[in-house]
Length: 184
Length: 298
Image 1 (cartoon, chains in turn green, cyan):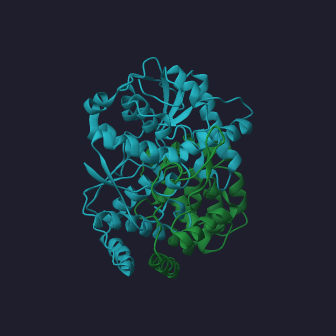
Image 2 (image 1 turned 30 degrees about the vertical axis):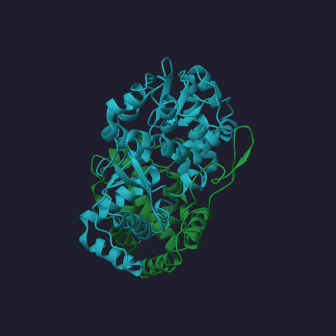
Image 3 (image 1 turned 90 degrees about the vertical axis):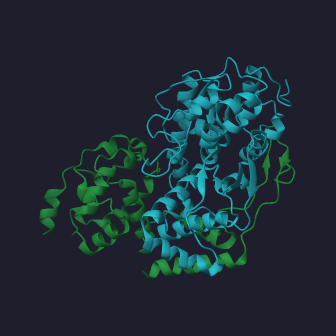
């Protein structure tokens, strides 16, 4: 069975090399497909329109069409441990331009979510943002800054109203949401 | 129009120039802004970690905005606009998901209905305020300026959602600039991404995106880059030096918000528009527009 899968991968690439020694994981594939709604990767016919317009392709060798192909073959574990899903700049051009309405970017987000769930390779700063939101409601508090003439200013000095705080009830509610969605 | 305004994280914590210029120009154009209490992050930073939690955050802010009884909500940040328009899209197409989200919102006695209309700064000015009023408010036409426009990805795509302008050939910001007497330049890199969303995982790549776009704008001879997104502006303005160092080029291109440009044309003092906070060479642009940097009164 894995041999068949190996033959079906049409293009050679670094991430494919990862998969040559592995078996596709069909249960994980179903899990990912359930997360992305109607935009099923089966519809992809590998026209590569997504990759040809992908800004991260030039810089970081992200190839959305290969992600779609690997996902439909069931190489989910390999995708989430390779770190490739974190090279997407979320410009959404792939979703806009896909003639088959596949939306590679939505698949990439689903894979990132799964990487977090499985405690695979996740850039730490993404988790920092989450804990900041849990703590304060926002990714950061108002920062001090300087003018072009290097004069120190803040919201008050600039005549801006007091920054709205998120109340305590939010933290409990948001924590519950995070717990619930992990259970599902 | 009386509209609720949701500022998000980036604008009220560091991109003060956008907030100041919006607060300065909108009331003069007949838009009364109502700040929201107890709002939180829009969900965009959480999308990569947990999509359900991101939808919850977006819906929570919408529910708070709906509670005001107002029928319009201004979202000046592109990231917030995407997260919130996406939540609106998903929840209006999935009754079960909407109920799930609403049962979580119940913890805080909130309920999301989907009744409020969302606007971004650009379509609010272009489609609601419209040409006549913008021209009327102008005191100082920006004749002779040639400007490059950067829309930011998240208000343009995906066009299956309620987006602000055409996904492949946006024109609204160009027209808004033309109404002020300036010209915009059509350049091939117009839709290129600023790189901000890679800053967390691949900063060098992010600054390369920023640098290459700024280099293109500079090479096409634009007097400035006009931006409508706080994250993009952070890259093009605040981090211009890092971008220049990353691509090994000399970059010296003024970057400013459309609302700051509009404020200049309306004759509002530059300090009230937060223009003294921009790090890029704004003074050069003001000189070209025939203004000094302290006051823009004609």
